[in-house]
Image (cartoon, rainbow, N blue to C red; front, top):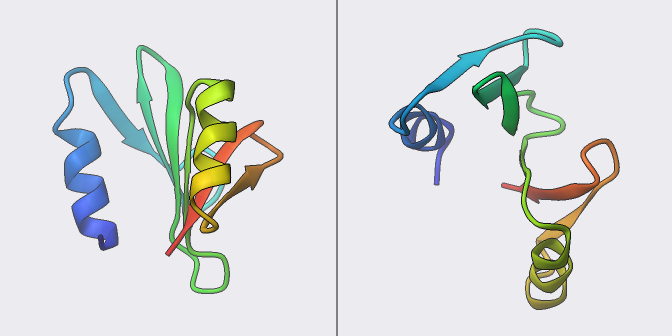
Length: 80
């Protein structure tokens, strides 16, 4: 999945807003003011951070080596 596909998917959901609250490479998607996706657009750290249930995050990390812990979200990160 490419960056534009991810962006289009996120903004297609009801009530989603997007912005760059941290810097010019961290695209954030929110619903009702709550962040649920951070898309890192930088070349050196390209990745997607998703909020999800902590137990699901553990399960996903066990099943998929590309899913790693995102310490700043305490959730998961996918690198692509």
